[in-house]
Image 1 (cartoon, rainbow, N blue to C red):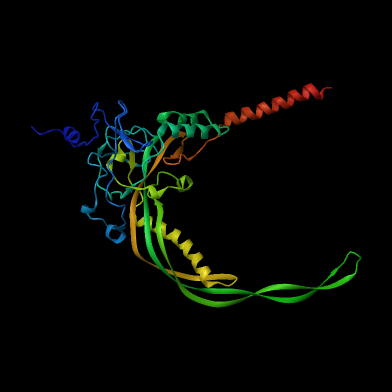
Image 2 (tube, one colour):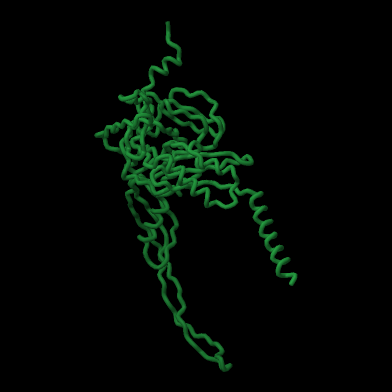
Length: 373
């Protein structure tokens, strides 16, 4: 008799059983170990001897099947039917609500598809209770926020999820043409009327600019240009969560995923590199201006050649939650290392109206008390 697909999936699930009580161990951000939520038993995650190494961009731009793998042997994934985000998790972790739009997850989990596996992970350091406490403080500072925002003050409102990022390294050699402006000053005479009404002749130095054609080359090594590989959160929101202590990146181990979820990257490797080039071009423009020198610079053209391009796929930790109000999605995210909170906040028209009415009432009361005298 052939086992059912459900039985087969159960047999493939690799968990981290507690040797003391048999419960499932989960990653504990506070001490960086696997911990039993029932008996408190702890186990150290074995540190890998492997370094977090760069991979060849050209080799993975069109990855072959042997270059792809699952995040964990037991990994399951589910896709949100509302916003399309795909999250991966290891049982007994489940996905009930989408962390990015707040919609109920109705799709059935399936075995995770192979992907370009992460080289490194920045483990959670902030426990969920502390993340929730930070959100409560953030909510308290939002005047006129609707009561719906208080949903985020509950422990189950935000969930730990690793977000995908790319980092890119590259050598650049840039050829430029432009003009260098050099100031010179000419003495000019002018007249003005003094306080006694007399016409007075004075001199002043007037600045002019001589422009000279220039051309040249500049080179630079770019290291770890960080690009979010998620489209589920606004870029400005992710940028505001920085800095990330990337020096603490660990070689990826599936154990870090125990008790947490991970989002599948939505920005492909090539698309991410185009975003990295846009960041690099801003830096290169500054290099060109420095190379041109003079007092002013005009850049006519820059052509940049990229070589020795490498990348890393990283997972960075956030606590995230979302809800819908008036058909608009509001998100709150917390840096899983520093506790920095960023989010959208709606305004309650009712609370604002009540506040204005209260002010008007106080003014009228004061007028009746003092104005009638």
